[in-house]
Length: 236
Image 1: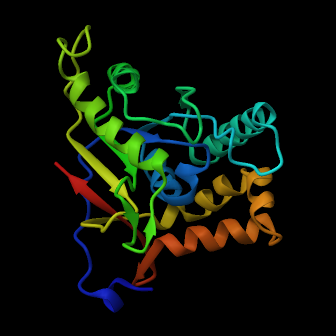
Image 2: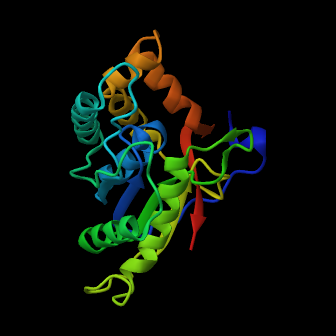
């Protein structure tokens, strides 16, 4: 699909940042949507970190959660290497039971203060996906906790410690986009990154893992004049 087929091209997202923290609920969440952007950012010299609320231990049918957590952690570590991410932190919240508690907000605030991002990237935390399908509780709750955690990081009375209020923007992937970025040079790395989740993808479909990964990445992109773009909703 091209931008021209769905209306006028979106404006380019501002590129005036050097550090990015991606905050998501589970392993594979970054790879399903924003891996191409992450690869483009790291290739441009930007510092990118991943903060995952859980280890996705409830995500593979038929695999005991304790074993699944080990598998999915290793797959996520491999996926990070493909797109140049060197900071990966797990908060070890329970998969499928993530709640937007003050305790989770505080954990997120501490990680924001540690990593000091200028841009925070979230996945869709709206009630629905595309207005048709209900979004999962983990994604809704984690997104809200992350937004509040950004604010908490900037207030030493809510979370004791040195404040950090350097997050200039929060962007959301999977909601109605307001801006786009050129990810042409990051597409192949994104496919490779998602392919690292082999055991997870193999449990979802009999289709070859590589084909699943490419189809998923392709589904996120728009195209114009031979370039590939990824859309984000920009806040701030």
